[in-house]
Length: 438
Image 1 (cartoon, rainbow, N blue to C red):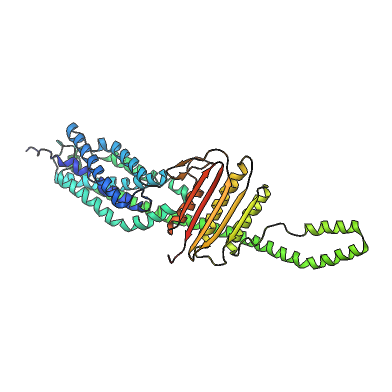
Image 2 (spheres, rainbow, N blue to C red):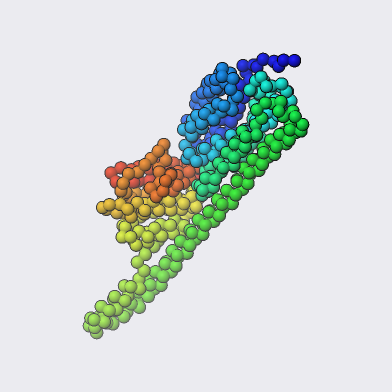
């Protein structure tokens, strides 16, 4: 009994899984698309169709298995995905590899189905049409299964900048699963029909799929825990700054309270014309008055952040000009305002320290309307700033500038915006934070 001739749709069906895979990738990164979703669909669907047809034609013409063209096709699609979203490369690649890892496990189930439905498949290197449809259905079912985690958990992780280093190790397990699946992939479907290999391969494929989903869940829980710890450290830092600020305020109040006693002593010395003693007393009294700039802002949290960087700037002889017109109660999250200010002032202080010529930091903050907080930080800089696709590269290390990217994410997550202007040695950050009600 001879086997049926291969059908031209067999390699097409195998490569058709690119469509649900691409949909899942863009679903997770929907907040970072460079174009509107409708425009992206009008571009991506024809492009994916062309890639599938060209890859299928090559496999059909050369009688190659789909795995032979999979690596170059995935490379092209990965580059296209990274260029379509505004995420850093290490995040977009992690999303892409995460989907590929699951799809490789699903392909094991399709290979099992192919061995049952087409046992005499040694004359064709591809899945039979029925097995190809099963693989496509499994991928679509996977999209439906992980729809909620992709639109909530994954998007949340992509927004968080506190867990940057966690993403650096995410890719290891998906890549390991991909390589392992290719390693154990049988050359012929009929090989699985020997003894109990079919049952073992099916159980192994299900086990891999379950383990990979478990790994993703554990990664999410670990990242959440790390993010909570970082947020707690930030809150503690703000509390420490506020505590130091309040201590300085109390010290100033005590000094002002003692001024009337100083004036009495000074008057007595002046009446006696004890000029030398008067000079000595004035010198001692001047040292007892704190030099810190206090009450920069009515909001205590923002006042603590601004006061801290005012003191740090003064230590480096960097003039710090501050105009904070903020009320005690802000229309947006105090934590968001403080994180943005801390990142902007940290970058401004670092740039001013390294600037050639005039050094300064100018900070302005105000309320616009009832729900907008406007922040402007200006400082000089030396050297060349590198901006790629709207993302500034770090001047301290290789890679993106995490501080400015964190500012951008905070501004955008609630409908605000940020704009960074630079030129002629001056860098200006304009940030608008939007509160509820607009």
